[in-house]
Image 1 (cartoon, helix red, strand yellow):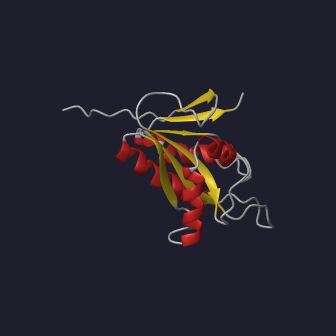
Image 2 (cartoon, rainbow, N blue to C red):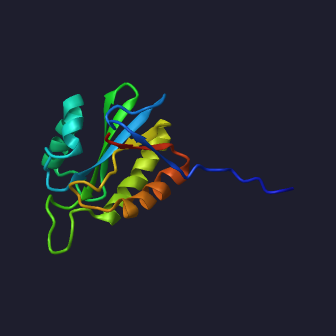
Length: 164
């Protein structure tokens, strides 16, 4: 008996567009990186808040409660019948320190692993800007392999949106 191998897509689709308006059919999760300081107001979150109030409201309530609000944690917020926003805490504070930029790659890795689990349960594709590279100060060269390993290699379609 010859060994049959299942091919898993390990590709990220890159498109020009708005990540708050994800392409394709079926369930979708838009993910983004949040800080562990409770701050919401700059970067991609502004675009999210213009479209839906729920992700910001749930993030702020989560921060106030303190329950599970820590680096590496993820909370999904449903904003439409087949659309969720994943608030992923992968950034320590809001400003660079002597230790470097706010991004915490180990926390982002844990977030992406949990996101992969959630996307599989929802049978959803994943959509994002180049997470962790804006205000978090990270490098896409370090983030992309995490997205591939924790999401794409699990057979979950991923689309990354670059603004025009």
